[in-house]
Image 1 (tube, rainbow, N blue to C red):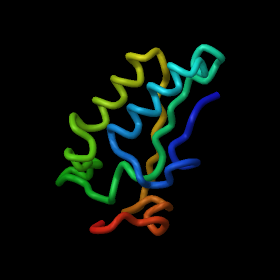
Image 2 (image 1 turned 180 degrees about the horizontal axis):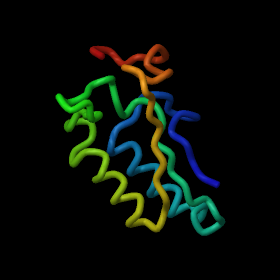
Image 3 (image 1 turned 135 degrees about the vertical axis):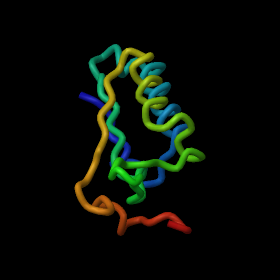
Image 4 (image 1 turned 30 degrees about the vertical axis):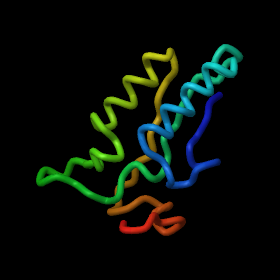
Length: 101
């Protein structure tokens, strides 16, 4: 069992938001009750790739990249999941799209 960002936040996520949700999962006792997964869904990636085709992220939105948030999740004894898409953008790109993206 676990928590998925899309269900409550759609694509409006960043490092601090996910960190707060991880902390809440632990402090509320839900992790101890068996909720062990934190799934980062739509909103972490806006279709950008480097010259080798690797997905890139906004480092202001995700300081330290996705490794930093995965390390934080793992450091709390939880497992991290992440949504990706083979296309330029994920399905949630169309709803709701944050201003400026």
